[in-house]
Image 1 (tube, chains in turn cyan, red):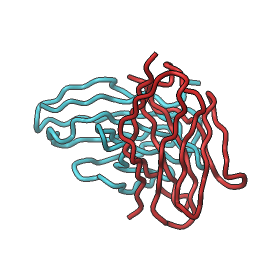
Image 2 (image 1 turned 180 degrees about the vertical axis):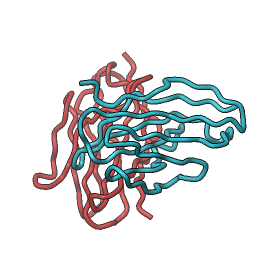
Image 3 (image 1 turned 45 degrees about the vertical axis):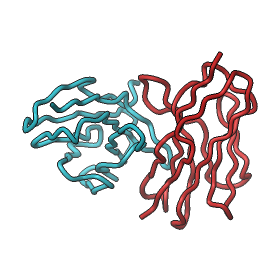
Image 4 (image 1 turned 135 degrees about the horizontal axis):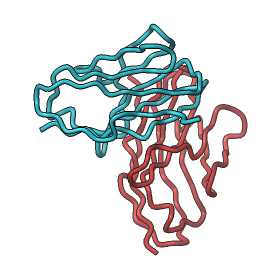
Length: 110
Length: 112
């Protein structure tokens, strides 16, 4: 039982490049979230998915897209990376009112 | 929009000192409250949570928090900190069973 997994762990992109961050959970949870964590700003919600087939914007969705591929997987895509997207990205799976976090992806955009 | 405020950004304590970290949230209907801890290089872990009932909740590692509805506060406490408590602490609020909002975090540095 791996919980919430994220790939990759680290990534360096050049401005304008695209990439997809992967998140998967094996707990059969309906809801999944994507956050970014920046120093002094806590975690900010980018997108969330309340169930398979649905996605909604969070606080800071600009520059991102998401796909809820199936119940297990929720991916985050940066179409044209910008230095402002340098951050640590966390995926979380939610059961009821409790969140289970993945280990994070540290992304640097140069 | 809902918001969560943590007023202490960086706290430095000596071992055995008492800890209190403040958390205030904006009004937004039904709230469920959480404190998370993040040790260096790791992901967030749940310390404690409040859903209803006794406003004084106990969590792991000797932490507790008190929900004061009239003050929109959920402060975290520990009577005697240890060096191993050095970490960043986040308050989070779930509004109306819908979205989670996090505070900006408090970095705690415990000197041995």
